[in-house]
Image (cartoon, rainbow, N blue to C red; front, side, top):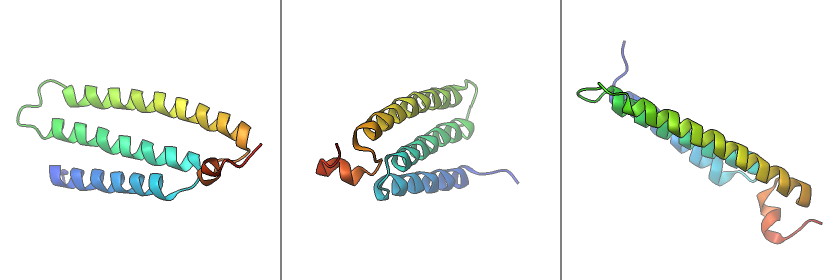
Length: 105
C-alpha cells in the first residue's frame, strides 16, 4: 500500500495543527519552541510530498528544500534555546506569562 498525495498532506496538516496548538496554548518557552519545530517539520514534509508526487520528479529539488528547512530548524532551535536559557537566568522561570508582567529579579 503506497501513500497518496492526499494522505501525506492530511498527515502534514495534522502535524502542523498540533504544532500550532502547542505553540499557541502553552505557557513555557520550551514547549513553544517544540511547537514551532513541529510546524517546520510539517512544511518540510509538504516539500518532499509535492516533489515525490510531481509528474516528473527528476531533480531532487523538494528534498534539497527539505534539507535546507531542517538546517534552518536546527539553527532556530539552537538560537531559541540560547534565548530561553538567557531569559531563565534573568527571570528564573520559563513561563512566558511572567515575562509580560515584568516579574523577576
